Length: 481
Image (cartoon, rainbow, N blue to C red; front, side):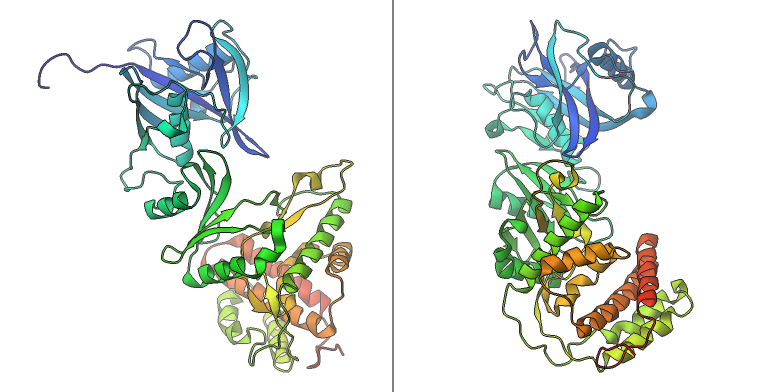
């Protein structure tokens, strides 16, 4: 110390009371009122330590009870982020923000003399009139940072102002400022495309190497930023989005920007939620699958059909490698069944090529929430995302993974065909069985190598279904004998 008084400043605690909803995570906010600092602005439940005898977790639990009436178990308190803050007046303090997802009681206004409103707010759409210090803590929390500096300047307002955002995230020991944000180069690319981004939410699929974030702009707007795992995936998705995907209109995302070196894209957000895991009534399911059929028809008619190139049949060349990797998880007779299909594929007549999505399954199909509700509105909106496997091929390529969704439900398959506008030819049915079997074995092999029991089970289930449906030998023309 060089002399003078030791640096001292207040320490405060902030409660991020979080609950999950269909619209994403919400946090509890209270509006300050009366003769207090920042009256009229929204803030997290918060307060100062009572003295040197009180630790920050004890203080958080006390403040939560005093302000909202809820009871929190210390075991349910999670450290979120620490913010070193300086107000426009020059006073500084250190704030510890804590996340809590379990509590007892219903939050209510317990101190009406200093709080006149309390409500849940979407984490991705916080109110405009929020204290800048509070907003800095929540932005740092959303970004996944552990430490942040928020030093305001003289003349800055108490309320959050996007044009005077003083938040600075401090990298952790790994060199990353956030586990939720991508590399700085990707952030810069995305912000050049859509402007300053306030929130990054990692929405990557657990078993893929691609990285995807949902981002919210400071001035509003929602986009998706995606970094592909390979140049091939990047090239296929960009090609599709720049050409035939545009014909799908609102039923598919629009490409905002692409960067080949980073293998990154910025896409518009499409309304709806993935069908994977969504529970619908049987009637709604049929309506949705009819719309999926109509959407598949639009995909396959996006460009004129063309003759199949030479040697473009099923991917039988990889069968031996996939069977080797999957063998320990196959049931008796599975390998013989697959090899019989491979033999039949050699003489299968070629199918004409069209544009295909390449990974048409329920997790990549979106539907509006109204499609799952019992309402008078019978309109069902269906959209499709994720085009990194899109490329020309036979139309049945898009039915390989989708067919798992209607297994044992002939009514859903019929609904799909009603929307598609035609039935499958005999040769297409045979090709679908062959491709589905090869895809299943590939999935089992991948699941075994990456310790993914769900993928293994899905492949085994599909093989069992195919064997039950195709007990008869298949002739080279695609006819059953």
